Length: 164
Image 1 (spheres, rainbow, N blue to C red):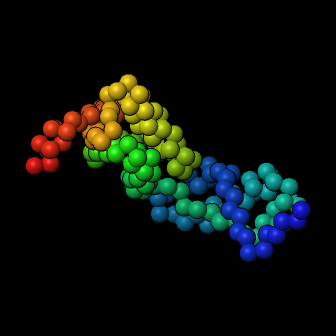
Image 2 (image 1 turned 180 degrees about the vertical axis):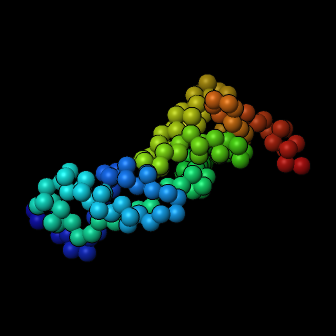
Image 3 (image 1 turned 120 degrees about the horizontal axis):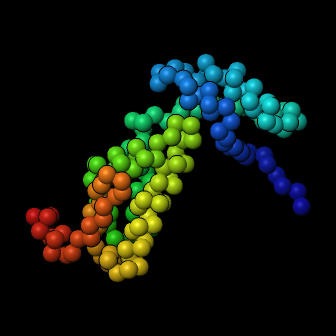
């Protein structure tokens, strides 16, 4: 069979050369490091491959101040997974900041944050659901401790009392 790739956009991402981008100041443009990054790219891929790539775009590295918004995006995805069970997560600002701080790595982008959310939020929450500590149709209040997140399942009466 023949595959038709007309009108197709293929996006490939890599952390090649990220060491040059990490060393840039907060306000420096990524084009300052373009030559260094492209030297690493050329050393890593064969010329035959690079000749078929139309464009290489260097993205600005994530800044610490961007992480809170990314945590919120990831939490919305998790909330969709919990929607069938009608389990609501109520993370306070300290919990969001804790996840953002623990998941911040300017060299690797948002990938470490996804792993932190999996390990520190999703996995413990799943264990609490399996152990019967968190029920369907409930709210779980989550705050940050010094070295982990603290989960507080709310009963119906507690939820009603705090909503009033």
